[in-house]
View 1 (cartoon, rainbow, N blue to C red):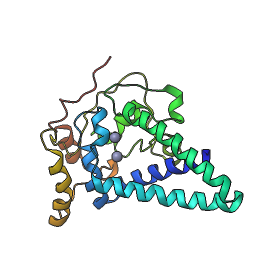
View 2 (cartoon, helix red, strand yellow; view 1 turned 180 degrees about the vertical axis):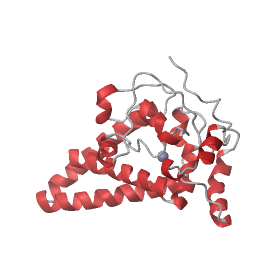
View 3 (cartoon, helix red, strand yellow; view 1 turned 90 degrees about the vertical axis):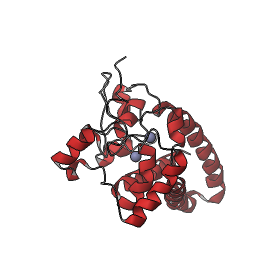
View 4 (cartoon, rainbow, N blue to C red; view 1 turned 60 degrees about the vertical axis):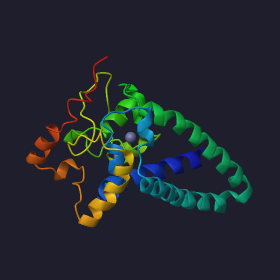
Length: 221
Ligand SMILES: [Zn+2]
Ligand SMILES: [Zn+2]
């Protein structure tokens, strides 16, 4: 069962990393990052293409892992563990997805080397260049630690500007957000990928001046 949970979680991490690295995929994932604030509704602010690709990516990783497990342990024990592993992961993620998209700065201290936290995911949504491509984890942050994308938070909240491209997306209706990636791709207009390394000083300044900056700063509590 643990292998199933780990496989699904690694698939989600690998997929999330790819969505930030590939320019076309980023267009679709950007819809989730366009949220100007984090709240329970943000987990539903996901482009349908993003949902389909996530399912396919996780399924591929899970297929490889379960194939190996079947060879080692046989089909029957695997079927039981697969079902219970899925249930456990679904319950954990239903809880954590809401918690991690809350507008609350909650750091887990040393536990963050193992588990994702609301503060870690807030960093992932930050527009600050030093936070780009950090904390891709869904459940276990061990993948971020292993692959160098880990950004540890402390109990002291960081002032964050949430959103993407320094644009105020708060008044854009979701149906428009669904259409925008296709329009941008057809026009050949692709947003810059959020990598600190590729940013120029001008880019960083532009992002800092984004209209979202002042709206969604985490208050100290
Ligand atoms: Zn992301
Ligand atoms: Zn998110």
